Structure formats: structure tokens, C-alpha cells
Length: 116
Image (cartoon, rainbow, N blue to C red; front, side, top):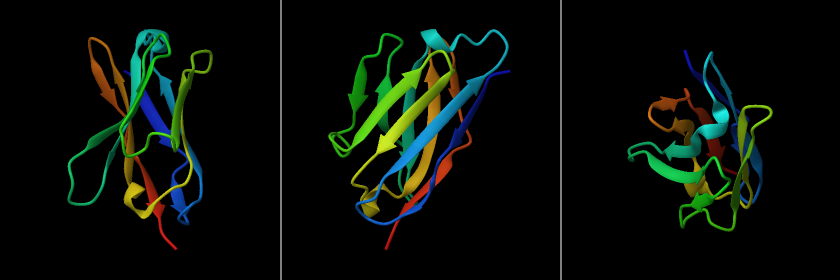
């Protein structure tokens, strides 16, 4: 059973920063070979890809977060991160961790609210 657990969400003012973490666990789950990604879903909107990082470290960012968010991974800790800077109200959403290779795994999500 693979488990992805997000943490680090919360309430932050516009212009502030947050760091999300996604801890992966499970027997026979080789974190190193999975492409990891962050997705988000705002109220009334479809889930969208925010950023991804391959097993080799190549990254992708959605245009709306490029230059403000940084995705990273620590294969020794089976953990992925999302550093979010210069947060805007439109970044408010539930953020989900996703692991993809031959199978797909999702976390339960963590709420990020950007508001003054």
C-alpha cells in the first residue's frame, strides 16, 4: 500500500511564502523512479498541474507559478517539496501530491489559503 501525505498548508497573506511537503511510504514503493508532481484544485475549478519533477530531476512548471514556485525532491527521505513564494489570492486551492510511473498515487491534499 502506497501512502502520500502532504503537509505545510495553511493561511498566508498575499506576498507570503509556504513550503509544502509530500512524504511517500509503502512497501516495495521505489520513490526514486517515480515522477512526482503537485496539482491543485480551487473551488469550482478543475484540478490542474502546478509542477512536476522527474526521477532525473527535470522540472516543469505551469505558467501561472513559474518564477514563484520551486519543486524539489529528496530521494533519501522519500519526500517532495514545493516552495511557494510571492503567493497570490489565486493560488488558494487544495494542493495534492501525485506519484506517477506505471501506476498513479494521490495524497489526500492540503489546503492553502492566501488572504489578507
